[in-house]
Structure formats: C-alpha cells, structure tokens
Image (cartoon, rainbow, N blue to C red; front, side, top):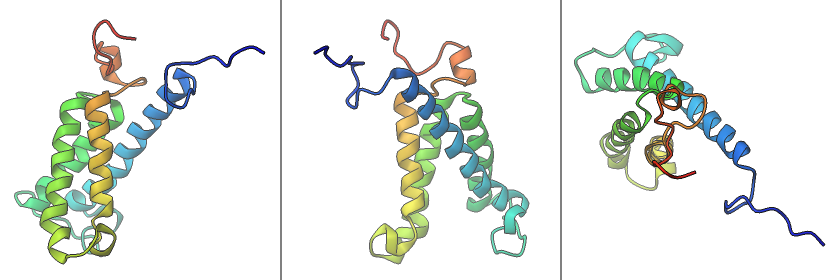
Length: 149
C-alpha cells in the first residue's frame, strides 16, 4: 500500500487550500471589521445608536471608527498587514477592557467575545502575514520568512 503524501502540515491538507482559506479569513475579517467602522464614522448600517448617529471624530469611538474602517480596508487588500494587524489587535484588547470587562463575567456574558475573537484573528495575521491575493505578496512581503518555503 502506498503511503499517503504528507505536506508537512498538522492536518495534511494541501498547501494551496491553506493559502486560500488564509486569504478568505483575512478578507472576510477585514470586511466584517469595516462595518463596525462605518457605523461609527458615517452612521451607516444603523449607526452607533441604531438611528444613524455617528461618533465624534476626536473621541475614543471616533478613533475606533478610523482604525476599523481604514485598518479593515488595509487588511482586506493585504497592505502592511502585520503592523496593521498589531494595531487592530491592541485596539480590540483595549475595547474589551474598556467597554466589556467592566460589565463583569465571562466574555459571552459581557458582550466581549467578538472583540476577543477579532483580537485572535489579528494576532494570527500578525504572525502569518497577508498571504496570497494581497498587496504585501506582490511587494514580496507575503508572510514567509526569507529562505523558508
């Protein structure tokens, strides 16, 4: 019996499938994240109060709106993914401790699970880079260390 080919990954899925799902995660997370930003900045999608209100630009919510809108866009197109992911991960951890953790309990109880999930996604992108279908890959910054496959 012929041995099953191994691709050097824990789940032995082909590298191409992992590259594609990496891009899907990056693009999907960025697009979803941008929705939070446009709510805060422009009052779109119901705004911050459900009635189309937007945050003041020079406030914590305004800063969050800028980071979420334009940081999310940078993640979608894969531009400066690692530094942007670092900033967004820090933003999400700060958002958790400022807005959710004071309400007590577990993240599911205080509404902070989405902020923490975004933080985890951005930590992943920080360590793995943009991957395929990104401007970073076109610039030669595709998340692979020099000299590695």
